[in-house]
Amino acid sequence: MSGDPLSNQKPMHWKGDAEVLEDLQKKLRWSLAMETPRKSFECSIRLLDAGKSPAKVVWAVRDQAGISLPEAKQLVESAPVNIPLPFSTPICDDKIQSTVRDAEWALHLAGARVETPPTSEWTVLPFEQDFMSLFPRLELLPNWKTIAQVYAGPREGFHRIWMLPPSAPSWETQNPLWEGERPVGARGIEEALRGDHSPQSYTDASVLIRVFGMVGSGWNEQEWNSHQIVSQPTDENWSWIQGEVRSDADLQPSVEIETSGNAIVTFFSVTRLNEVRLIRHRDRYRPGSYHPESEVLLCATGGQGYVY
Image (cartoon, rainbow, N blue to C red):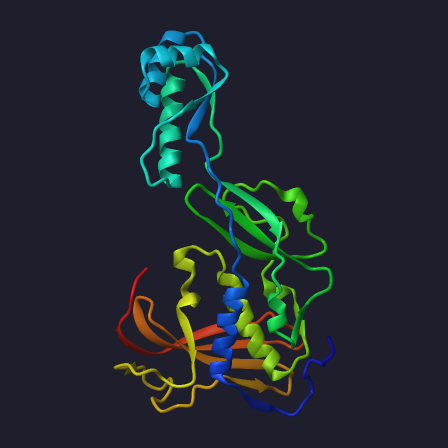
């Protein structure tokens, strides 16, 4: 992509449109969504053998599986065999894992050898949605791949998205993953971007980086999903933090290009998570880079917000 880092240039001030940025991030959230799989996992434990005390194991199987003594004896004599375990509905990972752990311990105490099947599954797949078409001023570095780290569980499925540089191991070699494990070499999208160095490319990057980083995060990491980019304070009973921003200030996004080539993006958002807050975001991009140094500043607080 053509375009020079704006170094040794005259200072430049550019004003953007908060409504355009907010619309862009809504479209991006839709583009980064994907149909995540659900997988049925049998709540069971595999009995390899009954060891030296098969009678004790029969009683343990009866108690853990909730079956009759003759049924338990038949299962034990059929080892190796899967022993189905009872669980409450609705199915959830924690309940399955707790049930399996209890059964594993009980059979171990009885002298049996057992193994436990996985109760969830993480895999790495290519992410093929064309989200970059929303950003004509930006593009991915050559040979970087977008991958999805996908979770398939009995109750729900979700995904995280990463960028994989050419030097990283191929995604095909990284399956399956341990729960929560980051794919080897995976990076955030800010390390995989280049652009035309226009002011708009920097505001676009600020939105892309934030939304991309929130995909698949835990509830406590998803704060950005509650933010609305604004051009003026919303209709709230604001308590202004003295000296930070005036109540009648123009909050449209802006970009300052310094003579050094640094690009400074400033924009404002309102979130109602926990407490209504007006926040200023400032991203500093060094010449030739789309990996910003970011800071946030609380400008005002409103009333009670909501909680997840």
